[in-house]
Image (cartoon, rainbow, N blue to C red; front, side, top):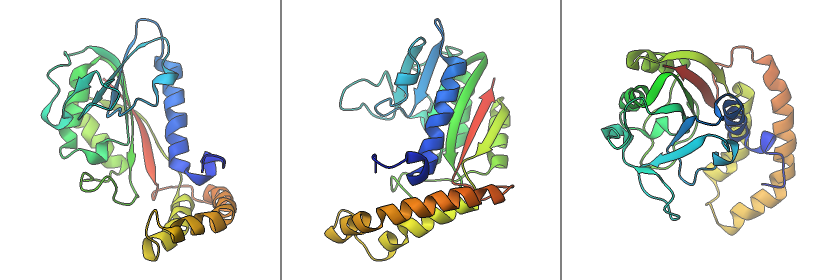
Length: 225
């Protein structure tokens, strides 16, 4: 998969990466403090080379590099109030049992004028089972922010109905007939990888026809305190 264009093979991953790159252009500066919520192995650290970059997750990783270990659903008392200029939270919100609690913690942790850069799903399969709880509309995201005292200043969908349809068609044989990691699974990928790429490229162009994009894979959001 890595030898093929991520933009067409894993579109929402590509959009999340581009969103964080743009966030870094705004937030990465000497003296700034960045907190990556649900960081795992901190793949976005490479974009924040000037700021102080800290990480949080529900458990420690193999490298022992998570700075704050704790469950944001329960609050993060180890992180002082108003102590970070920017929070990065990608593809985490759908895994929180109490997303409203997450937003309250975002608001508490951010300095006045601080920004939250967040991405989460609207239309996507269940994953990280059983720790997958919610999907979010643009209106629900705005309300979650407002209830916590955060203003939504930017929201954009990651593709429309054609990107969603491309994902469904590409994975349908796997969902119906193939067991992951089986020989048939790898044969399917080997035979159909190029046709899938071509289909995704065509559907990416067709997606320009979908002006509303109310059925999107993902949303990117910026909230400000």
